[in-house]
Image (tube, rainbow, N blue to C red; front, side, top):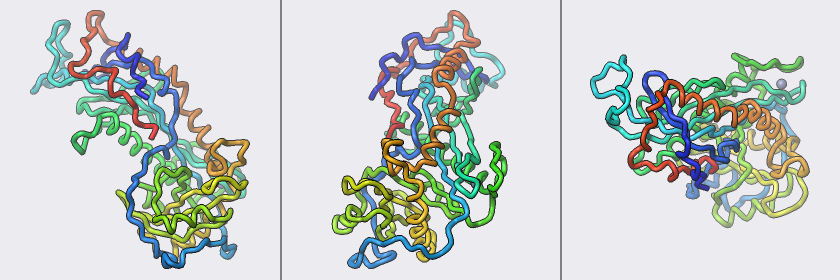
Length: 395
Ligand SMILES: [Zn+2]
């Protein structure tokens, strides 16, 4: 997927506040596709410590244990993100030492130091669905739009369809493609908004969604289920990461065999895994029709810092509560792993992202504002808009 064929042709160009000039690439069909937060590649190398719950030589399938109370409410957390446009932020127009109070010189001014750099305008949203005595209901939905740019002078973009807050992205490792760095930054911001949404759901602070009678926020007898890895969210109390697609094999072959043999409702023993970060994890098979060996298998994560007894309690709880929400096959192509509260939440969040065509047109308009008729700039030196535009956010 390159998707950059239309780039540059007729691109709108213009200025935003504080002298930032930017242009908008041609429409890319992939912009319209909203992406789930979980769609990120996981590391294929991991250190595994299998002896957390049972010694590796004694690994066996663990049945659900009906003892103990169930959480009063389950809070499902998810996020979606969508690239609205790739834009080019022009090089800083201000010569060194300038105060910034003067507009850049008019037609014929020499290009300022620094080349135009590729940037992303993206919308992203996170929310929480609560399943409690009051039924399944939306508790929080948080929408953000951002301009992700490596240009230090990048500033907010205002459009008639919404504003894009500037996020300055530092490329920490040399040779990291700009688009990947931008995409990772977007992913990181989305994780932050998911944390904001989760905290709001628990405290009902800042919640803009009315909850039905019978729902109570607060207390410590809820359980948070984050769609996707728990990375950057390990600090949330009573939280599980829910991973429904398997990009890598983590367990050694002799232990991995057990996963394919799990009966519905059973799980593997807990293990610890370390990639670029550490956590506890286990595999669980959701109820569903018999199929391929890994059909209905999900991997659950919880924080590395938790004591083992608490981890085992969470593992046991996951067996009891998640099966109830497995989606029926006819409703969702990823069934049963796509839990239906999460599927509904994703639909609602995507709706709140807004109409991608409208947002794109508004960005083009904003790029044209304040641009003199003779201001059409030459394409940025050394940066061909049609190359390297793989958005890299599909994972
Ligand atoms: Zn509720």
